[in-house]
Image (tube, rainbow, N blue to C red; front, side, top):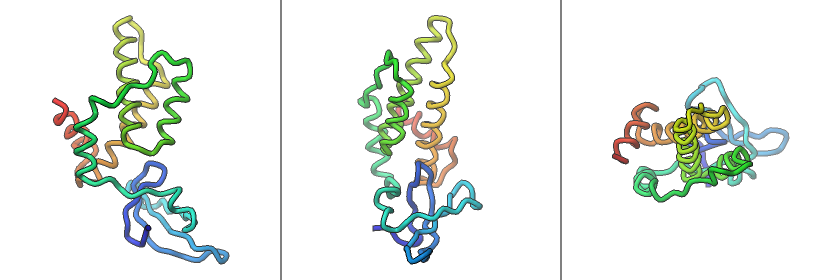
Length: 157
């Protein structure tokens, strides 16, 4: 399923599989983050299908952008909104990142309308979801993070 030189997502970060190696009679993939070249991660090869996923394609991203407006918000009045955000992050789909971004943005707009500031947890999960979403898009299109963000926003307008 995965092989050396494949670009993959591991815990929401874009990585390249550098090599396969044997450690204590177990086969491992050695991953390197595309953001931090000094970061190398050993993943058991027999767990790779659970821990890794292939990058989305440009076609996948275009489909995602076209359906952003139909991706539902999380329950904005939930007492457990942080748990909802965490569940979405574990989901590993870009749709779940969009749900976090839309929900935290909506909650922020609502709070600002009532002269309140954005909560720290909304800000944290909003920025985290943006980072994961735009980093993957930037890598797929070979553009900067800021250009990826602009690309998505331009497509929505």
